[in-house]
Structures are given as C-alpha cells and as structure tokens.
Amino acid sequence: MDKIAQKKTSELFEMTGTFFAFGDEQWSAKVVPDTHYTSCGAGMYCPTDTVAKMTITLNEIMKASNDREMLSRGLDGVILDSLSNHECYYTGDVEDAVDDLAARHPQITLDDIQRVYRANYDEAMERF
Image 1 (spheres, helix red, strand yellow):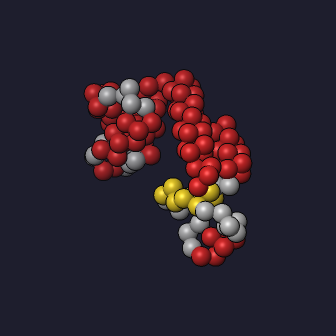
Image 2: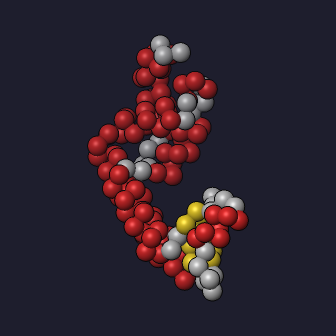
C-alpha cells in the first residue's frame, strides 16, 4: 500500500469508525456505546451501519494503489517485489507470490511470474 492509500485508508477508517482491536483493552478503548459492530476479520471492526461503505471504499482505494504500483514499477517490477517479499528465492516456492499477485493484479499470469523468477534467479542466489 502506497502513502496515498495509507492516508486515504486512515481517513476512511476515521470517517466510518473502523478500528483494530486484539483484546478487551483495545476494544474498550475504541468501542462507542450503543453501537453495533461487525467483525471484518484480522481484528478489524466497523460499525454495522457503515461497513458496506467502508468495504466498497477500501476496495476502491486498494485498486487505485495497485494501479499506481503497476504504473510506477511495471509488470516485472511488481512481480519481483512480490517474489522478494514472500522470500520465494529462499524457499524455492512461488506459491505465496502467486496468491498475492492474483489478489492484487489478476492480469499477471503464472507464466509471467515464472519468467521473472527465472530471469532473476542467479542474482538472487548471490545474496544467499
């Protein structure tokens, strides 16, 4: 997520009352009395009456961030970044990068990922 998306996400969460809580103390610090909340997963909670707006807008923010990433890094750069973030050269397994890229950039194919993996393999192995 780029800085633009981080800022917009923070503003969205503030506007919709969305917060993260991983225990009773965090929950008590953020919860508003007489408000019904929906668990959005991964410790994220949102008032039930704003969850649809939050979800739709968050998806729009993330799509715009992913589009900016593709424009700034290009196809190979996006793939290489995911391969590195998921330590694919260390594990020898691209599955986590495939899952990540399928969610963020569905136009990227397994052939694209394998091509970039192979093209950068020798250089990556020099770091180990």
